[in-house]
Length: 261
Image 1: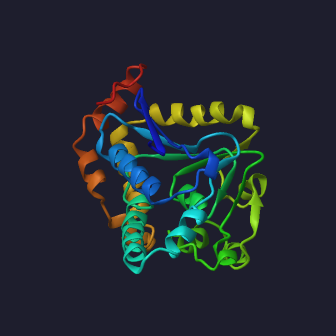
Image 2 (image 1 turned 90 degrees about the horizontal axis):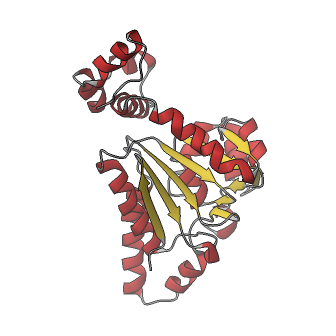
Image 3 (image 1 turned 180 degrees about the vertical axis):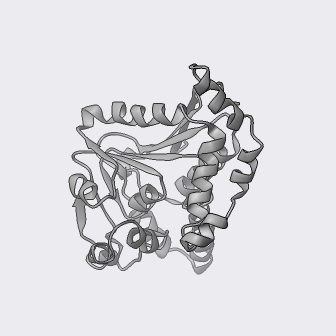
């Protein structure tokens, strides 16, 4: 049975982690299925934006399935080594930084550990009011090794990030919005409509310009401002010759909706 449900409709991919009985936590099969879904989102030119969420209204994703982890830890050295190898490879695929399609995290409950790391890898985060987020790995003798220890200090002020990383404390959705980690917080009943508004705004935009914008912004994060001004990502170079670059201004001048190609 698949632990990941991928629905594609009208240029929108919806990826649902479907393990509500385990708080939508990841075991290795879920990791591999999720990585395959992300690969499809990136490679399918019909998809313009992806929404990632968890089944139910209790949990977005509780991170790694610790029951599964405990079971593996008691297995043979060969089984443990194989699991470690596969997890290391899948983590690189799942939390990769080279996705050029816009990703929206629809946080419908707990987003903890790898669940928050997954949300941090997205471009836009919309959360229900009751959601809680955090990186509690240190309380379990683990580290937020799927880029959480690197992304969080880059997305919020240093001391705030270290306070959460070094204590494993959770934060509320409203607190996450206050410190700039979440774009929007709404009642659970309004979550789908809020996400739909972001999706609609993205779909109004040129796919070529969107991918060029995201790739250039992400690729140049480590560069100085002067270096970033000189950098041209592959997607930006492709956008220069795209039909969308002509269609956008033309549609504006002719007072009509653009026909993106």
